[in-house]
Amino acid sequence: MPKNAKTNRASAAYLRDALLILSLLLIGAAAFLLIRLTAKDGRYVTVEVGDEPPITVSLDTPAEISLAGGGNTLVIENGKAHVRDCTCPDKLCEKQGKISKSGESITCLPNHVHIRVNGDGGVDVGQ
Ligand SMILES: [Zn+2]
Image (cartoon, rainbow, N blue to C red; front, side, top):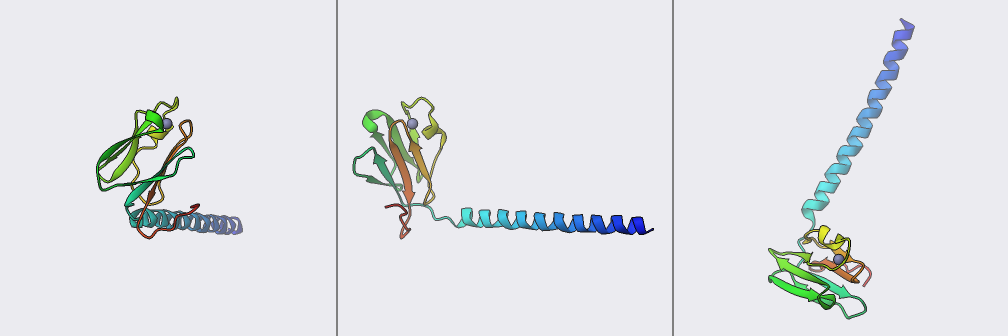
């Protein structure tokens, strides 16, 4: 009987820990979702190529812009930006997909291209 009681206490403690971890995970997931859902759609992207001065491109107007001497193409469509036809070997920039939320970015290291979404009144970190 005492042995049983001890086992019960142990499993109760285990259950408490499991519930605690579960609720922490749920809170984390909820916070993540909240941030994703409330992230503002960016209004424009800032494009930096090497040491050239950055250019600003609106996400509202569909466009195809050749970057890095034709090294890759920035495509704006449906309010999103992505990179196409990149000459870099790993195509990581193309795999980064479409960006539209403020703060999202695409980087192509081989071509020194950095594309970042900026929203209205957002804080430009690192500018
Ligand atoms: Zn690339």
